[in-house]
Image (cartoon, rainbow, N blue to C red; front, side, top):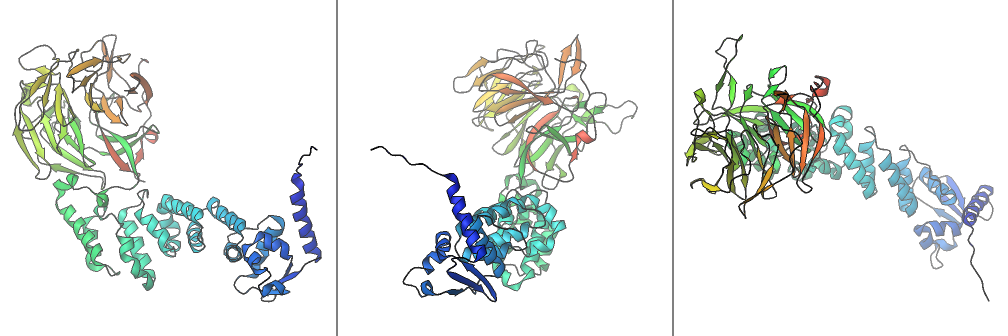
Length: 596
């Protein structure tokens, strides 16, 4: 005999609705819940179905199972009213004014669905005014999802809360404040301001002093000026524990060895909320002349911001990074002794270092030789400056190495030739240089040389297929890539396999490019600005293009906001700053003469 089941969606709602009608009319109510003087008639069967607390209470072997009145002493009348409304209607009245009462009742009575709604309400209604309260409530009632949401909101908006609700931060629970202190994502908050908040929170209640080490160990003391560190160490109103004193002393020592800082990096000197930025420096802006602006380019959002000002207007220089510090080496700078009406440039041996933690420059020991149109690289945490031109156009074959820890330069084995306009990179712990022009030759070179140890000699490797000058090299996935140079009519690039000592031609750029900046971000080579030939003239370009090594193809990324050429690029990890100036608000892009 055949049969089937049929389901009515509305039946459940009807049953619940009828329970509410019976409750409103006082019919068939078999239990009275009392909170102080407040009485709430209800039905045992529905309470037991909705609450684990009542289910256990109304079992036959309990005393309460036969009672007509149940006194509830822990919860408030408001909280009970809201929970009963939810049990009978599936609707839960929620507001920040009564939320703690509601949660207290729902938690005590073990109404899981009501607790979940409260948690969701906290998570989706966070504001600057209630986020500290929300974090405290979520901690008190163990609501992990709401707590996570509140803490993320606190971390993102701490820089606003320090001005708008400092009092609320002082009432924040320890768990949430610790989450803020240890987060790498806090943005636009000076580390000294974060430390000040933590010290004031500890001072606010003597019972909190037990948390001193657990809180203060997350402060990045290397990001705090040394004068403030000394003051905190000697004058803090909060007793500092031995581990914290050790961290402060370590940071003071870090500040005392200024030149060595790049090779002493750890968590305590690392910027929070780091974002990858391409740094553009030096060269010329079309129709404006030499540039002193140091620009940070956000390749992901196509934003350009002025980071700082360079110490000199410089061209034909080199840049490199160690420990998230930027070094600017040599080049040609304005001769300040000459007539301003007819400016000239002079080759320099100066080396400047930029620290993004404090947005400042220092001058380190200068190179032993004045250099421009040379190359540099990082090898074994040392800066290697190779070849180039000196005063009067004389070429160098010399190679010198900068010891960061000692702030000293020393010469190593010379190049096989005096050369300039070459490029270099490091691949598998070997330095490679390619191309350029030699003092004893008129033609551009195809040569590739390698250096495996700073004390060793240069070895000739397989030559490039194209002679290059003023070009760029980079290493991506243990492969050497050479990009366009100044006298290359076919815009070709190629890659070199060190294991096979072999070059392979790759897809050329569809138009020539030189005097551009090169940066590598996430294994993509980005060419920024520069010049191209058009009708036998050098035309500045604002194109930013990227080379995809997996698909051997080029793609347009965006337009630079300024026609910039002769620049050098590096990659730094920067933290957001309220002081950063958006170029879009200051300068309008200059249109190119024609599109490529």
